[in-house]
Length: 325
Ligand code: UT7
Image (tube, rainbow, N blue to C red; front, side, top):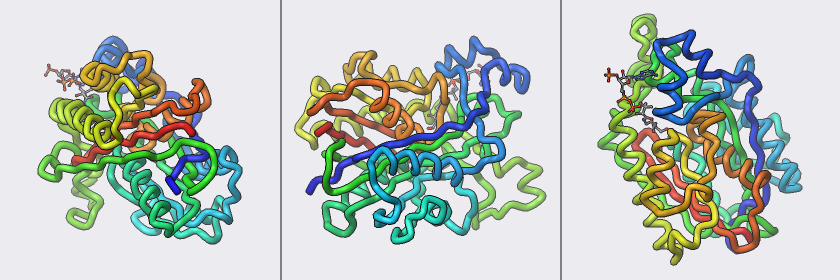
């Protein structure tokens, strides 16, 4: 009764924010952005919100899985940009997709949220608690970004991905998911105001404390080390080696980070799936979107293994290895 992903979907807003648009907004250049991040475009939600993107991705995943929304037992939503503090985004998605029998909960593990969600889904299904789970990752990162801050505004984009996870049917068996965190490094990536410690006020807004603040250089180093170590841990737990991996989907944080992990793990570049050039870093959604695109654009055959590895604020990290049935 191994948990498996039987359908996926994704949604990207239409508006494209290009490097030349960013050149008009801050002191940067296409050359700098491409050479330091590999990013060219990212998508920006205009007049639509985190739940709207999640709903579109969820409906696509349900259609792909051939599952009716009323049959879903629980909706898990990975996001750090919820529509509201309350109610949770999962409840908004539940109402819209018509999952009338589903429980609904948000999970916050920053960019690692989708893989944390896969682990929780696997546990629910393999413990016999639930049979059909809708996992949604949806982020409106543009709501946390200061478009005067060149160190963050060039990186992030908006979008959503979703998966239907069940106890039967053809799909991607979730073999192992390895999770980790290091709260001692919490200061590396924060949004200081807007929570209960420092509610938003005129002063915090004037000080721009409601925007994301990131120590890019340190975060970069941790991202490479943590995703490499987590991938190795999960390979060992699965009884697999790097050579058994058909596709790797790293968190789409920065092309240099992605290439460094591939190199360290000795996974050939053509096996590393990338969307970073066109969508930037969409936080929790990045792997969810990339997995959907990989399954639709490439041929994934029976017994192929896909390794997905994520890293984000917290710090949190996670790796999942799934196998095509
Ligand atoms: O989602 C998970 C969490 N996030 C990440 O994983 C992000 C990890 N970090 C990164 O991707 C990279 O650190 C960045 C892309 C954010 C920055 O790249 P970097 O190569 O680490 O640059 P840096 O911060 O060391 O800055 C180098 C120089 C600095 O100028 P000086 O001090 O050398 O004169 C910056 O002020 O580049 C400058 N700079 C820029 N120049 C042009 C920083 N941002 C920009 C910019 N355009 N957008």
